[in-house]
Image 1 (cartoon, rainbow, N blue to C red):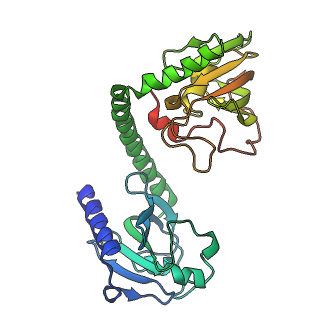
Image 2 (cartoon, rainbow, N blue to C red):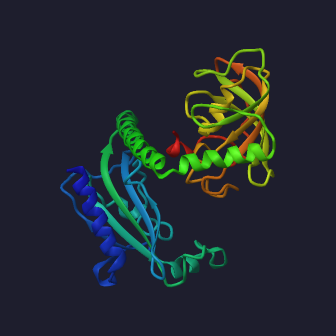
Image 3 (tube, rainbow, N blue to C red):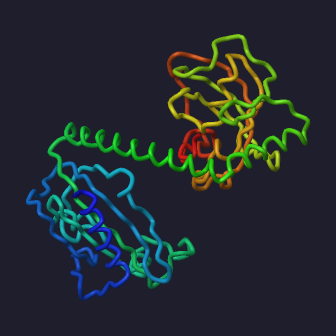
Length: 335
């Protein structure tokens, strides 16, 4: 039933994006064109309630571009704060206030209007947004909670369901990736590099290659431990450095890209060496936005394990966080 309701809203939103006529919409005091689609719920929002929202954002016009959609991931949980009609330019909360549990809201505003009000800067618009386009948002008020405790319980339930879906998806992706031959090709790419440089490295069962210069003589890096690492990360194909820093990895908790953590397990405290990572064990198919990495790019890290502890030590986060081996979308291709 939930999937059917979600599908119905998506179909409605797509119809709105592709066949919008202003006559079908009302205009809010704040300047937004909107359409409110009533569901079966009667519960209305009150100050302090926690909203469970599914949201999409899209640019429609010269080129339709989906900017955001959390239907397949996690809903948003946020407190409701009432606003006066017309308070602020193009404030969607004045319309969300009209919603009941189960309602759907579709709204849009022209990009030209956002530019005129200074909300968008024309000179800074990405190439896919043009004057004359429409900026759409849809909201689905899936539930209303009267306190944080109830909202947190639901959020936990949704998180567990999302994690289960991701595991199943990752398993299917892994099987398809294996069958495609891409995994062996990426492993061979690293092997060819090592051969060309006359580097001797051990290969782990996962497919990471590790050159152990000094194994270390302290506590081993194992699941459940926290390994503090000084590293210099480099692009395999150019040998150019993208970041040198240090951070602490919670081993076995998905706190780093798969190949980095796999390589660290070959060391003890005090160990030094180099970890060579095929693309599928690095940042994978979807590198962090704005990072210097390409899809399935092979990398290597010169590392020194400076500490191995049972608890997370006090530390300051790296100044530049995006390019480091911290976990991100690469886990979706973890083998």
